[in-house]
Figure 1 (cartoon, rainbow, N blue to C red):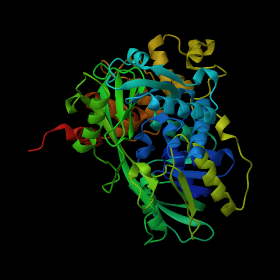
Figure 2: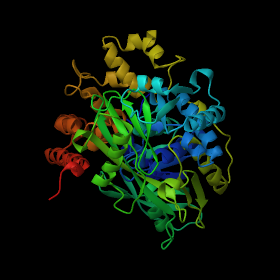
Figure 3: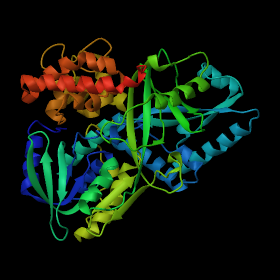
Figure 4: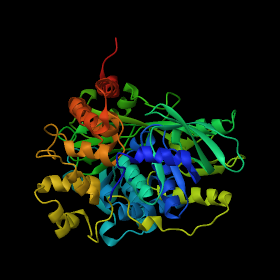
Length: 550
């Protein structure tokens, strides 16, 4: 399915300046992407603008789990668990390449088996709420069985474990494929386009924009504006009504990445941190990532930093959960930090604040959404439309967005990715591509993998840019030609998560990637040098916390 061709961004900016849209969505994260797709599928004219790159905020810095929210049962949020479990199935249906099943293992410690009995009851209730099939129902392991499947678990007072399935995703690509699907349904989507002013409400609203790439101002017109700016929600509200008190409580979550050989786990292991919070160790190919923290945050929004205190919290959880590994800061090969835009609840600690979304309609008609979860983004989008459509005085019929595949999600009737890869049509279109390369590309791009192969200009273009690096020249070209990548960081942090998972590898291949982008996009020598320098600075800062201070 064609995506964002090289001329798409410029053409969409022209459309923004020329057309009056029904909805203008501010924020190109998962919420804004979901609203744009849901609106476009209903026939509503919609544009989505993002001040930086798509998914460059919270939506590329999550724990990358499409999960049913088992832990919210402890907080009594039954409706949230039911909704998350339902939406988990929907994401797997519309984006099978972006929902990889993993087994969650929850160890239970104590001096009696009471904790194991309580977990079994909770998982039984979760199975019912999630309406899981027989093949996905939980299992309970004895102490010996738990140690057999995860031999590095701390053995003292281990009573056993519960095992149940969840799904791992690439959150940035989920945003991108949602936006591509919105684009194909008629939506206007542009990145690096910042809102500088919201005009006077009443009738058509004039929105002033700034194109960060061309360094030019433009004006858009919309009947209704939706504020889906994530951590920047309060800044957009202030543009609408100066002096408005903030509604967000920002919390920071960080993740640490280790080599699988240093942290050899076979399941997504649920650990307990020193304050009782659950944290995860999630295997992902040759790496394992660990997260997350949940601390109040008041610093810069663009690039929240990992601190030694953040890392120590997770390292301590690893030390108490696994025996004989002794992992330290020097073993970390990648990190990321993201911000949760939660609705402030007086007197509650960060981990106690509800993850429910909240939608408000201001006196000016500005529709604002804050809070929410990655898993439930489609339901959130429908609730935004429920609030926005009455302002448009229209009621288009629902379009069953949870049934229509995202970009890359149409497997032509194949039951799974393996069957799709083995189909005659794929074998014909991918003739000559090595099976392991084909499996990797389909796992990332789904049915759009053929587009990547078509970007392989010459022999060897599908080979890794460096040994052990899961990124090829063809994928870089594809990012520029079909995915609206505008900068080096767009490719190395979001079109591919290499910089997050293996920072030094990303720094090593950055000049080669930048060279390909320069030829595709038409960068000057000065721009090429600046891109490499900027990315190297950002990458170095990501691991700066490991360096001892004087």
